[in-house]
Image (cartoon, rainbow, N blue to C red; front, side):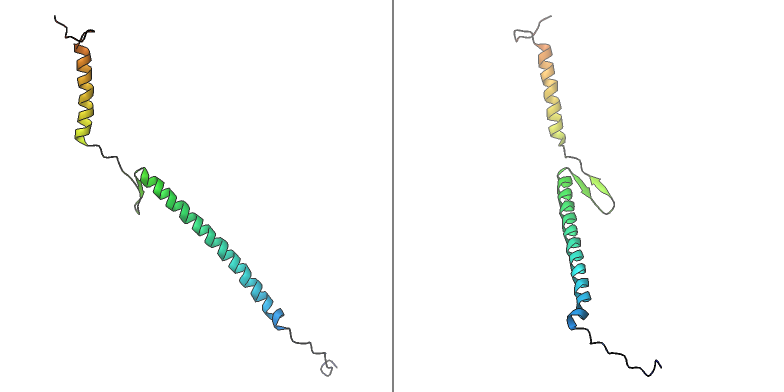
Length: 104
């Protein structure tokens, strides 16, 4: 009968063959973690560079969205530039070719 037969007992697996699947799993997971970490570093560098370049152009990212700054123009500077053009136009319009004022 089947119960009475003795089967050959197999030798126990060696330690290396028992640990090999675990080593392969850790190696694959380590490689995937390294690739993921390199991708993370690249994304962080790109993000920092983009923030720096956008900050140079007065664009700032906040939690609420994007804030765009305007270059500050002093009122006095604006008036000086405007007035200089008006004065130049006035002087050019009121002088003759010889540099003297016209008399009517």
